Length: 156
Image (cartoon, rainbow, N blue to C red; front, side):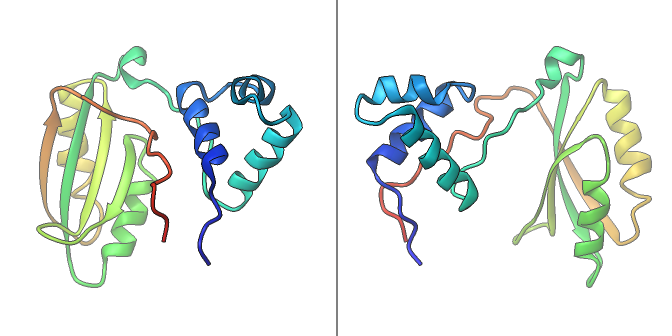
């Protein structure tokens, strides 16, 4: 079934991407065409039908976690799911995806120091049954991060 997203839904999402704490009454005021109740109803529908999620994200650097790294992981056949699940359970990991191409799993981590990254890569990851090989890329500068993907103009 094709998602039912209209221009008002798109504008509501744009306002929330500017400020996820924006009240329905403020969104309604900015839209000028809906009541706060109508905005809340639309938000409820968008959330309940899985079209948007409203989340909060900690800022690692502000908390002293200044090292981010992306890790490509090669896994033994038949163990991709179990390795991915073990990675999800590790505190340092904030992203895990099964991929195609040169590696089986892509993951991203955040740690305080390079020593912590070395311990993570030298002890925690190799201890996961099924991990064959890893390639680690330390992120030296972030240009974009977040959940700011808009509704596409053309929906399936």
